[in-house]
Each structure stands twice: as structure tokens, then as C-alpha cells.
Amino acid sequence: MFRPAALFIGLRYTRAKRRNHFISFISLMSMLGIALGVLVLITVLSVMNGFDREIEKRVFSMVPPITVSSFSNAIINWQQVEKTLYTFPAIKAVAPFVSGEVMLTSSNLVQPALVNGILPDTEKNISELADKIVQGSIADLVPDRFNMIIGEELANRLDVGIGDKITVITPRVSLSLAGVLPRLKRFTVVGIFRAGSGFGFDSSLAFIHLADAQKLFEMGGAVTALHVKILDRYAAPKFAEKLTTALGQNAKVTDWTQQFGEYFRMVAQEKAMMFFILMLIILVAVFNLVCTLVMVVNEKEADIAILRTLGATPKMVMAIFIIQGSIIGVIGTLLGMAGGIALARHVTEVVNWIERLFHVQFLSSSVYFLDYLPSHLEWGDVWRISLSALALSLLATLYPAWHAARMEPVEALRYE
Image 1 (cartoon, rainbow, N blue to C red):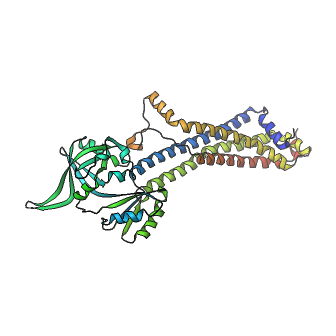
Image 2 (cartoon, rainbow, N blue to C red):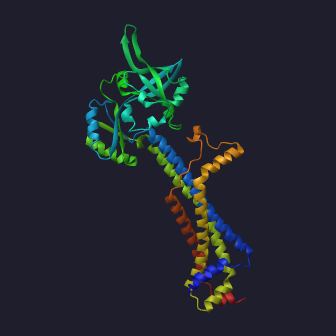
Image 3 (cartoon, one colour):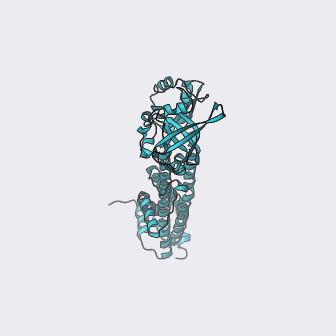
């Protein structure tokens, strides 16, 4: 069967036993170095993707993509604004709410909190609060009952549970014969939710019915703002600008990036920097590949001279060593891909097994938001890493191959 001479000889050099075992060892180390670099890069980026994905779930489960409010902190004709918002095809749901900062007291314990008045039926379309409730139900928020759902950590700090009473102190004051007094109202705890640590939802949020909140903060029929859920949350900044134009100058439209955007941009920058830092592992292996091919060229000087005298062109000689070096790069990259994909998919189980074996805990939810190591494999990262490793391996073969192609047969055979 016909095979190009350069390919045949390059494969033959790769398979043949070399007289210098040190060169064989360096070749093996170069291959394993490339494989290790690809494996580590795929695994580390998958873990970072896992953290990013888990944190996104926690943020977007409680924070809507867009909030529409007014500069007076009250929307009187919110039903009309709601109808206007629903004219946009990209909007999936709209929910009114009343929000205010308060102090919660129970059994001589005091905690600050942000109270949100919501409509339970519409809130289900905006956030995942109903799914986060571990005790009670969102349906227990009934108007004029003055019931409350609070975060798990906030409940622990106030030492309250289902059925207990909490006194709400608002910044608004009432005038009486005794002078100026703060407004107080007692609520009954009917639910406790757990959104997860890291962003303070469990320790700072409380939910009551919209009608109760309007009475508590003396809003009348107005609301503080409207939460808006859209099809693509990552298009929120541009869509917010569109809403600002459509709703007029009195409308104040904010999106989730203004509150959490810096954090996600920081994660993206860390991922990019981690990619370039870990590429140094592959660069070290590529440097070893260059050294290996240079030594192979020096060892094969006589063979190169004979090939040249038999009619081999400099391009053919160059192709031989490019093929030989590329084979090392391809095998190393494929081994790294296979190992990286396998480890990325099972890194959570591996870390959990190590923690059980040595009775240690690598991650704490109070520091890293999670108490386990998440992983999410993205094929775009796999191909980007693999193609980068292959490109560097190919570049590493150019100088040794060029050096072999410039070799003069007479000089190589002089001392043979």
C-alpha cells in the first residue's frame, strides 16, 4: 500500500528503539507532560464552571433579572405599568412587591432585615422562593393575617420557629400623647426558607403578603417596584435600556448586573487567568519536546545525510521530524483529554472519597459558598485546551525540523 515517504519514516522513527534510552525517556516525559497539562486544565476549568453554575443558581433563584421602580420609591399605577411590560414578548412574568428595611425582635433578640411584601401566586413565576421553603408553605401568606416567612439563619438568630411571634419595627414613626413612637407590628412565623449561604439571603430576608406590607409601610395601593423575569437573563442590561426608553423618564430600571455583575466578571477573569497560568504546564512539556527532537536530529545525522544523498528534499526531511514531534503531541493531548474528561465528571465523588478516607473537609460553606467540589464540563473548554496543546506541539517541532533540513550531507558523513 502506498504511503508518503515522510509519513512512513516519521512513524518508523517514533516506533523504532533508539540506541540512546535517555532520549526515549525525555520523549515519554514530554508526552506525559502534555497529557498532564491538558488533564489539569480541563479539570480545573470544569471545577470553576461548577462553582460558577452553582452560584448562578443561588443568585438567580432569589434575584430577578430586572427591577422596575420609580425615583419617588413608589409606583401608584403599578397595574398599568404591569400591562405595559407584558406587551414586550421577551418578558415572561411580572410581580409587584413592597420592600422596606426593618428591625425584627423576639425574646429580647434583635436582627435587621429586609421585608418584602409579595403576592404568593405571582412570586412563583419570578423566583424559586416556594421551592426553597423547608418549613411551611408560601400559600400561608394570606392578606390581613400578618404572617411571615423568614430565612433559616435569621430564624436561628432570633431563636424562632413555626408559630412563633416576631415584632417588626419600621423606620416610620407614629405621633401619640406620649410623643413620637416607632411603628410596631407583630407577625407570626409560618415558613422558613433556605436559599444557601454566600449572599446573605437566609440571614437578611423576610417575606410577608403584599397587602400586609402596604399597611405596614403605609403605602396605600402603591408598590415599591415590579420584578421582571425575561427569557434571557444575560440580555438584561440591554433590555433594561429598552425598558427605560419605553416607560419614560420617571421610570427607574435596574438589572441584576448592577448588584452582582462585578462578582461574575471577577469569576470570568479568574477563569481566563487560570487558563493562561496552567498553560505553563503544557509549555514546559513542549519545551521538553523541543529538546527531545533536537537530540533526535543530532542522533540521526547520518540517516539524514543518507536520505539526502538518495534524493530526499529538505522539505521531506523537515516533514519527517514534524510528523514525529506531532505524534508525541497528539498522543499526549488525547491521553490528557480522556483523563481530564473522566476526572472532571467524577471529581466530586473523588474528593468526597478522599475526605471520608482521611476524615478531612477541604471546603466549608461559610468560606466557599459550598461544602462540596462541584464540576461542570463544557465541551468548548475541552476543544479550546486540546487545540491549544496541539498548536503548541506543532510549533515546537518547527525549529528542530528546520535544523534537520539545513543539514549538509557532506558535513554529517565526514566523521562516519
